[in-house]
Image 1 (tube, rainbow over the protein chains, first blue to last red):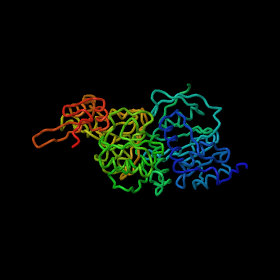
Image 2 (image 1 turned 135 degrees about the horizontal axis):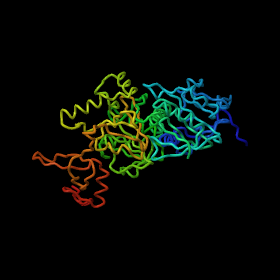
Image 3 (image 1 turned 180 degrees about the vertical axis):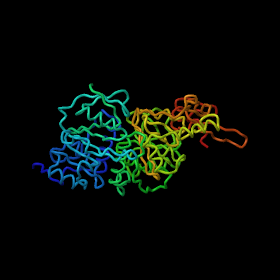
Image 4 (image 1 turned 90 degrees about the horizontal axis):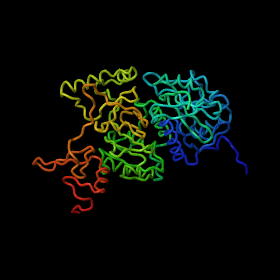
Length: 192
Length: 290
């Protein structure tokens, strides 16, 4: 029997504990920029990775607007996300979470960066898949002992985002079952 | 146990708290508003810490709770039992064995490692609140990085008392941007705020969550001529002879006799188990059972 992927399949087997494990992975990478963790438990329709799907089920619900960027915006993904999370699908400028490839998510100027009094009212981007065009960056700042390393798409844009601190966008990078993160507080320099 | 969802809270509430924790980690020291829930304990008993712990715990965790350093006080015992019942987690009193430690007003003496998470119960998260009661104004002061008022307060301490009299909830600057209340820990603990573990702060009644990621720069506010000093009672522990731990003063009788003991009960116990004996102590295991 072949596995039939529908909008109803691919959810957590045991939502409370699967989400708890997934959140710990997500929290660990956000607290320690440059580190990578396994993130598994949910399967979304193509092109979303398992890590990205798990992150969506862990963090999104009817209270969070999600923007599906470019190739992630398929009928299958829309139905899957709506069934499993109930999250409203919104444009980039209103999104709490946006998901897609780096190219599809750009330009960053579209997303909310928070306000001076509420820097938390900002978007979180889930950059999914394709890391071929990435280049090595050295990270310093909160969560990093001396320096950490992470391969990033478009270091200049990331540096511009860090300049906005305490405003700005936070990033998760997902690929297969791996997740890493880059909060706005991290200072980025070119090279490993 | 199956009468409750894992770790008591419903999934949507946990997602909301988890999103707030992630924002808090991304902007260290900034107080993220969250929709604090009613918990089966009164506000002021650690509802903020409990909600953060509930959103953070996994079934694989080993949980420790301390209240003023002690594992065996009412607040610590009931919160530990709460998660034992609703999350089925293992519990411990030993700092080294715990993966998540919820604390009221102390940082454990033993150095925490990078696999541990320290969750603080916070009564008043706003360090400027007693200087400026209006939330609209304190929010503006944080946004403008306008912290002069806090320095005036510390200066007035010096002009009235000769030195900075603030002994607990001593304000810190986090990552060169936000002034933060480290919760009412004694200022003895302030230097430990730069640690390898993840630190999460939950204020239930005030509906705020904030965080300090590992190895984040945390500086206690002070003046060049009145530098910050992490003070403690000038005694060794009377049970375990430790000279490096924070001490509680215990009145023994009405003749002026008193003893000083480690506030961190696990630290004191492990030192006594290692054979250290203080002025009024006996070797562990030789106490009179009566």
